Image (cartoon, rainbow over all chains, first blue to last red):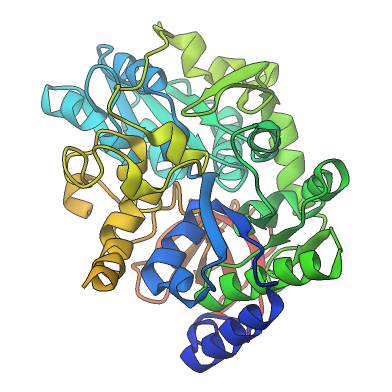
Amino acid sequence: MKFVDEFRDAELGRVLAGQIAAAVEPGRHYKLMEVCGGHTHTIYKYGVDDLLPANVELVHGPGCPVCVIPMGRVDDAIAVAREPGVIFTCFGDMMRVPGGHGTLLEAKAEGADVRMVYSPLDALRIARENPEREVVFFAIGFETTAPSTALTLMRAKREGIPNFSVFCNHVTIVPPLRALLESPDLRLDGFIGPGHVSTVVGARPFAFIPADYGKPIVVSGFEPLDVLQSVHMILRQLVEGRCEVENQYARVVPYDGNMAALRVLAEVFELRPHFEWRGLGFISHSALRLSAAYAGLDAERRFRVPGVRVADPKACQCGEVLKGVIKPWECKVFGTACTPERPIGTCMVSSEGACAAYYNFGRFAREREVV
Amino acid sequence: MSDLGGCASEHCITCSDEGVPMRVLEPGTDGIAVCAGEDDAPCDVLVDLVGTVASGDTLLVHAGVALLRLEEGALR
């Protein structure tokens, strides 16, 4: 059971579902948060929640970096993209995220040179090929994508490429989890922990969750049986009165993380004093910026960035969705004014966003229930 | 979604928190290897974090960087 097919076996899924049903205490409600957008996607795509007892509720956390990017940062990106001579590069989904003044895709339609890339290395290649232009990479993601940005910056510095810079929006996973645990409007019983973030940081950083808050967390893989097994492991901890960090995804995640990647991150980045998260507000030490040694490659120093805070549209309830306070379908504009084709909120943009995942997969199961 | 500027696959490298198993086709030089996933075209991958690689090695790649080496058989 190491790779893909074994983790999608329907018969094993039914066995696990039976074990979960046997583990829960009747009359008790269990509220578990999956931190990662990848887990949310799996849950809706494979109907994992349909296999769970009615008293086991999964809520969707803030683990999609596109979904938590505030509108003001999108406007900052568009301002940089519109600077004369700039080639602005970013991952695909980011191009469709609405800011207060449109999207990067709309800026591209209006003449800005915005290009989709699959890695920061692609952006660096564009910089080499266009020495007369300024090439900016929109860096986004948790600790999983941060190493790729860091290694690219190290390479750019080593090669002395003067026309490359990074607009850094990397965030870190632990501070928002702590913020959620401090939130009075969200009572959680346990966490399905982020698998690939843990490939870099390990499972160790999550020890504060059982230690400080008395909640179990199980670092989980992304196949449907991974998620089901993780739910079962959390429930067993709760039933047995245990509270600890467990690693369901041990086939990939080392408990102490990837030390080489952590050293690279420590060299290239430093923590911002605070950073705004959509739906969660400002969280201290929750994001990265370029360290002093790499300040010359920082787009926020090289270009004028407005830095204006933009309020979310009144109709949009991404904040409540990201905190797990409401379900996607409980948002007033879900599936009507806000769809994947014409998103209002970030959760509908990314395929891993809770709203898009539910729109694409979960709503059909819900419609079947109604019938 | 590709026509809208999204990722070619249903998982987005930015937000899915997804690592993709890839096989090394050419170890290359200067920390860059040519790798390919199960159904993907070859692409450049930074291998600084996993040390020396050889043709046929299987790596877990995220946003163009190999984060760790996988066991034989991870990619079919």
